[in-house]
Image (cartoon, rainbow, N blue to C red; front, side):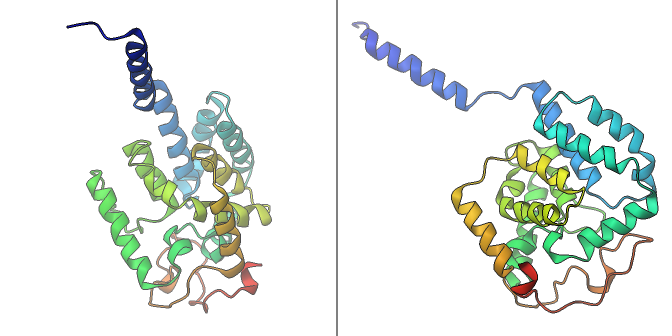
Length: 252
């Protein structure tokens, strides 16, 4: 058999190298760092109960030990504020920011589907995704709660684990926009998360602008995330009765 021409051999080598780059095995150190970043975000976006408040020194030390990066810088900016606040102040601000304002709710499917039947289907699909990844939610929280999605991403890895975050990138951008407009310290955590996701497209930007102006779809089917105080943590302020669907004016 005659040897392959040199040009063909070179072309094959080039294709093999390109495929190797696309299928590159993750660096274990980088994978561990990414897992830590996601778990830190998950923890800091949870209700600041006594256990989390007590863990502030350890969390701050973990953030300070991170290698320099835009993500680490944003986390450090948040923990610098977080460690100086009184527990009561943290609790009240958290509830006011995430439980009483629809524009910065941490329930991701709300931004895609609003209070519609499609949201119930999306929640079911997300729960199935977690089960397929070998993970079951046991604390009664909804699967689209951002800290839950972050924990799954940390445990399942950047492929399938981070898929729910990538799918809800526009909702994450809207939360970030609302927190930035309010000058909330929590904006640093959303900025940190967005640095780990693929850059937004022009279509993403247009969709976020439209969502901010018009709000999510409205069809009240009993999925109001505040009904009965379901997500109010122990000792938190009691959320109000369900409010009417968000209007255009509220999102401007």
